[in-house]
Length: 145
Image (cartoon, rainbow, N blue to C red; front, side, top):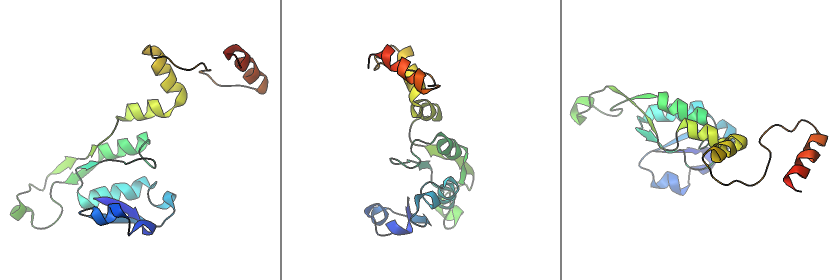
């Protein structure tokens, strides 16, 4: 199942998909970034799993969590008995990193702290909050700029 905005109706991913759902107008905040619309498309189609692609919601921990909380009907279209479905609900799988990984690696300071804790070499820098221009200058001197 592919989702698309009205601007992308003739896109390759839409024409190659077995099924496609329009989720809104071209503005990304009214389509691809609208978690409610994306989740509605998942529920409407009974999708078993969601790969977020690249960009847009792919690095959004809230989206990953919302997907994991969705329940969809095992069979959505046609006569359930004729297709052999039970009509029971099942969880949707988020095909990507865990919400913890998304949240940790989406935050530059948190990801650097995790790398340091794991013994991974990182570039010199400051792992806190810069409080003033004078503080920034002090940090730059300490790092070696």
